[in-house]
Length: 344
Image (cartoon, rainbow, N blue to C red):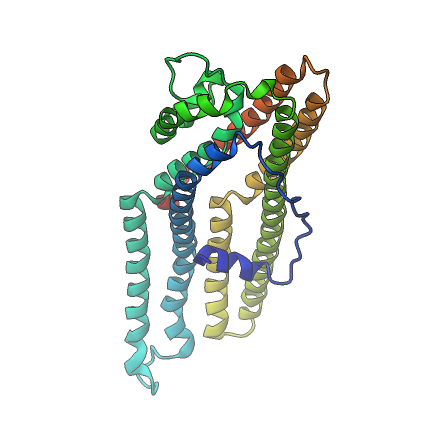
C-alpha cells in the first residue's frame, strides 16, 4: 500500500463504503481467448508501471502538503516549549528544531525535484492510457473487418477518433500491428457462428459491469474522503478560532502554536484534497457508472435482436460502450494533466 493510500485510509477510519461487488466474470468466446492471453503480459506490464508512477506522484504531493504543515510546527514548537529562553534547561537543544525544519524543507524540495525530473505524472498518465487501451483490444477486435489490409494499424482509429492522448499511444499501435495476423485468423467467420454473438455479449457485459462497480467504488470513496476532510478542516479552524479568542484573555505560547499550526494543517489537507480532484472524480465516476449501466442494457437488448440484425446492432452497442470509456479516460487525462507537483 502506498503512502497516499495510508493517509486516505487514516482519514476514512470508521467509514463504511456501501458498494456492490461485481458478478463473476463471464468466460470470453473461445475464439478470443488466445488473443486475450497473448495481450495479457503487455497489459500487466503497463498496468504495473501505471501503478508505480501513480503511487509516486500522488504520494509525492500528499507528502509535500503535509510536510509543509509540519515545517510550520517545527518553526513554532521551540517557542511553545520555551526552549528559546536562555534560562530554560533545554535551551541548548533549541537548534534541533531548526535542523528538523531545514531537513523537512530539503525533503519537500527533493520530492518536487525528483518528481519533476522523472516526470512521475506524465509516466503515470501514459502508462495508464496504454494499459486501458490494451485491455479493451480483445473487445474491439470483433468490431473490425480483418478481411483485407488496412492502412491504419491502430485498431481504435479504424473505428473512431478517441482523442489526442490515444493517438499518441505508440505502444498500442505496435501491439495492434503485432497481433493483426492472429486476430484475422481467430475471428475469421466468428460472426457466422451462432454461439459467438451471445458469448461475446455476455463477456462484454461482465467486463463493463466490473468497470461500473469500480467507478461506483471510486465515487463512494471520493465522496467519503471529501466529506471527512471537510469535517476535519472545519474542526481545525474552529479550534483555531477558539484558541485565538482564548488568547485575548490568557497569554500562552501554546495557544499561539495552535493558532499557527492548526490553520497550516487545515490548509495543507484542503490543498491535497483539491489537487487530487476528489469532487470532480466523484461526479465523473458517478456519471460513467450510470452511462455504463445504460450501455450494458443496450448490449443485452442488441444480443436479443432478430438473428439478421444481431451483428450490426451488437457491434454498434459495444462500440458505443467503448466510446464512453474512452471519452471518460480523455476527460480524466484533461482533469489530472494540469496538476503538477509545483502546484503543491
